[in-house]
Amino acid sequence: MGRFTRAGAVVGALALAASLALTGCGDDQQKPSFVDGATPGSSVAAASGGPIDPSTPAGPPLALSPANGAKNRPVSTEISAELPDGGKVSQVTLASADGAKVQGKLRTDGSSWVPNSPLKYGTTYTATVTSTGKDGETREGTSTFTTMKKPKSTIGSGLYLFDDKTYGVAMPVVVEFHPGIPKKDRAALQKRMFVRTDPPQPGAWHWVGNGSQAYYRAPEYWKPGTTLTVRIALAGVPLSNGRYGDVDRKATAKIGGSFVMKVDNATKQMTVYENGKVIRTLPVSLGKRSTPSSSGTMVVMEKKEKTVFDTRDDPDPANRYVTDIEFAQRLTWGGEYIHAAPWSEHVQGRQNVSHGCVNVSMANARWLFSKTKIGDPITIKGTERRLTAGNGWTAWSLSWSDFIKGSALPVPKGGAGPLL
Image (cartoon, helix red, strand yellow):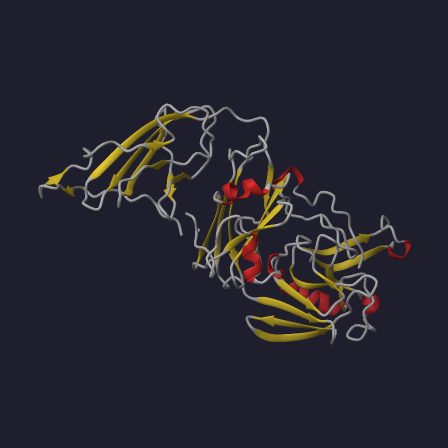
């Protein structure tokens, strides 16, 4: 019931403030495991059978990227080498001209070495790569290159995930961009969006149509107790429109116990599951026919114990009001919430009278509020309107087969592993 304007909801300075701006009930308003480069052994068998010192590589030098003498390289630069057949990178070192070493990790497919943090602008670096062939022979290559000056035009970005927080099993990794990312640039950015799960679970990215958001999820809800480690390594990534990624964003968060809500419009009941078991059934009142609730799977995006729904800007005078609300849990950008509605308790379980929200009694709203986490899912079925993609964190409103169609990179049927 009610609707808040979304002013400020899109990231504020795009650091994504912890609180999301409210818009209240009403019409829709769309608005990885890490692999370190291995250290070579103390000796390697030579072709003659005798030991050799790995510090004196044999064979022709490796050709590296960036090439020796390269200038104006982006600070998102990765280090790679042209390897002989069967060769693997055994060591990578990268240091700036003042001798400061840069830490990094090798991609899981061995294609390149990724610095743990963005390189510095206008700085000279020297990279050294050592490879080991199938016969144990080592080769080495060295390249000195310089990064570009800080660009004037960048995209804004945000990450809806915060360190040391515990989220629900349906919490997607949500990255927001302003302006939206053109389709031709999404694959390059997606290669720089790293997610690691412990225990390991496959996953995939999905881009919203206008490129303003990308979601990462697994084929099924996260396993309770999962640790999500995320790095959105955008700083300095060049885009086709002359802009560059603004900053790297990182977060490590936990997934808590399973708490799932399911609402059936036919019965006007909410069934609540905790760790797979039904723990309570609650009567509800959904949106009336003229302002129906959305059918689909949503997640709790924000919780406010007390707030005000102000819909005085609604074009329909019949939908304008200012109402004090308790135990509000946001589900969509367009203004659908779970909240206490003492005024409709007499029809809850029998009739829909809300402006699109899930009305529950004061006692039930208080109980739900005490149990839920940001990222807990709620599925509503049987209403007159389907959930619109992007109207909230809608990653779970699609089947897995449809979800992976939104990836800018190929995704195996069961999901992709981590890039790092």
